[in-house]
Amino acid sequence: MKFAAAAVLSLLPALSYGHCIAQNVRVNNADKGAAVGIRVPNSNNPIQNVNDGSFACNSGYRSPVSTQVIDVKAGDKVGVKWGHVFGGPQMAGDKDNPIAPSHKGPVMFYLAKVDNAANAQPNGLKWFKVSEDGLDGSGKWGVDRMIAAGGWTDFTLPTCVAPGQYLLRAEIIALHSANKPSQAQFYIGCAQINISSSGSKTGTTVSFPGAYSANDPGILVNIYDKAGQPNGGGQPYKIPGPAVMTC
Ligand SMILES: *[C@@H]1O[C@H](CO)[C@@H](O)[C@H](O)[C@H]1NC(C)=O
Ligand SMILES: [Cu+2]
Image 1: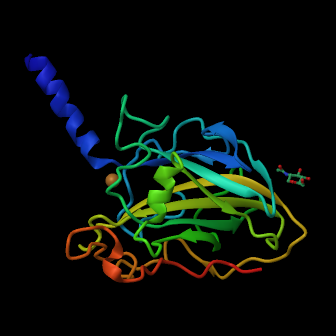
Image 2 (image 1 turned 60 degrees about the horizontal axis):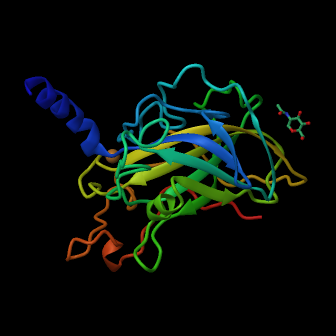
């Protein structure tokens, strides 16, 4: 019994956090497979410092990192799958898969042009936003829609985006404790994609780290109403970062 109790106790911290990991890519709903064309961190712990040196693409990847670059066309629906741990659930019936439902917040995608997506270093790149999904009028968040979709977050690649190789940065911010400084949780993963397109555009570019401040209104924020419901309290939610590019 002693051993069993200790084993249960040692599981508790992992169970109570309910974090997540970006781990698959799909194109027009075709799943490319686990850790294919995406750099998957070993740990599901969030980054909480907006100036963290790994804020662009996370760090501590599962080995070997995929050398695949996924072909996509402008106008395609591109998705990233999130799970509580690598593979999805941590155990049978895991209620924190794909992420703990408490972890309300926005979902975003950014692109950065690179020479070779298979081995591009994520730091020092110029990122532009291609998608964002925050709080809707019914009090539902991007994370709620991610959970409803079984961990998938998809967006449509703008038809006017310039062709070439890119890192695709998928990001979720969990805001359940974000009323206190440095308690917003950033989950980040980068996919390796090759865009074919007749377009020539990018959006307003920013740096990671650098684009966000710890006290941005979408990062230091109380998302609860007076009754404790995580619906934004009737206030619109200001998604961090630049505007989504337009064609
Ligand atoms: C990227 O896509 C173009 C157009 O389809 C193709 O010619 C090129 O070989 C691809 N590059 C990589 C690295 O996949
Ligand atoms: Cu968490």
